[in-house]
Image (cartoon, rainbow, N blue to C red; front, side, top):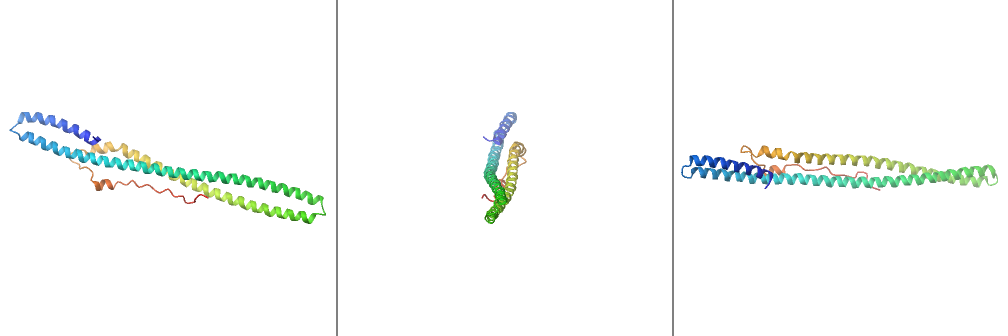
Length: 217
C-alpha cells in the first residue's frame, strides 16, 4: 500500500467507526448502513487513484535521478579522457624541452668548434644552420602543443560546468522527492482530484546533453 493509500485508509477506518456509531443511534432499517457503504466505496476509489498517481510521480523522480546519474558518468568519462590527453601533451612538452636543450648544447659546441677550427668553418656553419632549422621546428611543435593544452583546459572547464549542472539537477530531484509527502497531504482531501495520466506525463525530466565540443586527439 502506497503512502497515500495508507493515510487515506486510516482516515476511512476512523470515519467508519464514527459513522458506525452514529448509525447505531439513527438506524432506520438499512439506509444509514447503505450510506456508509457508498461513502466507503467512493473513498476506496479515491485511494486507488491517489496511489496510482503517487506511483507514477515516484517513477518520474526515479527516472530523473537515473538520467542525471548517467549524465554525470558521461561527463566524468570525458573529463578523465581530457586529463589523460593533457598529461600526454605535458610529457610531449617535456620531451621537446629536453630536445631543445640538446640542440642548444650542440649549437654551443659547434660555435666553439667554429672559433677553433677555421679550416672547417663552412662545414661547421652548415651544421649550425641545420641545427637552428631543427630548433625552430621543435619550437613550432612546442607552441602547437601549448595551444592544444589551452584548448583542452578550456574544454575541461566546460565539462566541469556540465557536471555541476547535472549535480544541480540531482539536488532538485532530491528536493522534489522530499516535497512529495507534503504534496500528497495537500491533494488527498475530497476537494482535490488525483493527477491524471496527462498531467503526470507533463512532468519534465529532460536533462541537457553532454557534448564533447573539442574532441579527443
